[in-house]
Length: 343
Image (cartoon, rainbow, N blue to C red; front, side, top):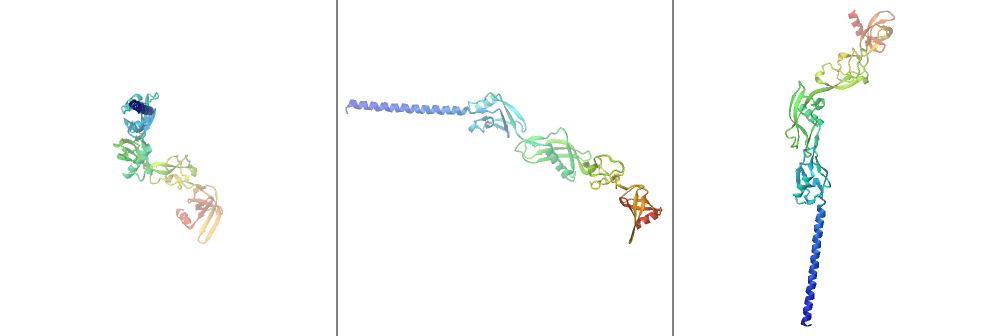
């Protein structure tokens, strides 16, 4: 091969290397362009949400937008108090996101985002239970079930952080048993918001369950089970002779007119009248080893156990006999002695 041929061969190889280099450069540029396109496509996935709910005190980028990726934990704003909502202008959110180096944010026409913070609701019932427990601890009642607690109408409960899972506690209380008035401060273990205590006031008094009447009764009317209603009555209204048992009322009769809804006293009730004046009754004479029965007539009304006058229709004598059942009176030795002593 002469020199000229060698020159041409070197020239051809140089051109082929140059072409290969150009092709490689084009491939690299295309790859870079594709990567940039994919980055832009990924960036467009940052899309604002119109409404969100968070549990903690800080709103993160991942809460506000879809497609936050590795930026999801970036802190942007403070959340509203637990149990409340607030709005944030979309433009303000977009500016905050762009300060994180994310340029492409899609709002889809949203002008503001509603941010709600969840929380733990502390109800009136929760507070009543805590106050009842504290009053029992202080000796104001036998047990929580015997306390009637009425909170002031203005108190509707409160909300604490979701993370505050501890019990409701009374951290301070002043109670006047005579006025039945109390004022207290309650808190929740684990809560920063309620750490100093939430003020609450109301009335508390010890009560007991007693039988009352569902309807008024006239003298002599018998109390049926349907007439009895158990009500919680303040202990201050219960006296030593107040009837406390349903069984002590059922089947008894009104000794006098009785109003409904009032605690019953022993003097309000009596055994029902089972023998009426002029009723024909069986007079039973009981002696040791002897039982004799004759017809008689009642001279007065009476209930079981009452001693009334009866007329022996055979001898026309008036005897004192104990009513032992409907239409039956009994003359016993003790009754006979009592009758003799009173004549």
